Length: 190
Image 1 (cartoon, rainbow, N blue to C red):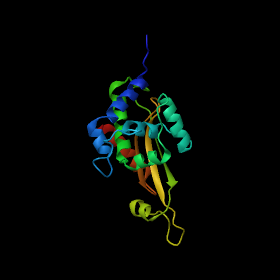
Image 2: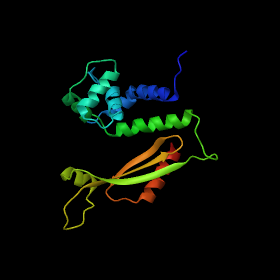
Image 3: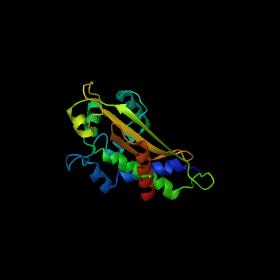
């Protein structure tokens, strides 16, 4: 008898969702023809490789990923980066929102006295300072100081069920309390 874990069922649901035509069309960043041809690394594999990264060099990550795919022919680092440049960044958020909805809709949740235990955290990270990032995110640097671009990251985490249920990327300095309220609103609206 084969025992299938709940995490495997969620993984299969994510893969099937990533092959859905409506989702694929949302993944296209620039042109309607992106992700239509059969490539060495189709969209579903591209997304899974990005989600399963472990912090190694890209070459090692690709080698390990293709080893897991039963020795399937790999893709060059340049080919991988070209495929990734075609991907709409909102696709990752869409996929993780699908995963979260599926998780909370179909599974028995761990609760503490009939309540979810949630934790919210925010942090700032430095990013490369260039014209595009300054235009997109503004600059938190004070006048007369060296320009250093920064993003604010925030997420809300279900402690008992061990899943991030909402996250956001914000401009430089942000109000963590207001962002926590936004996370709760987003979670309750799903």
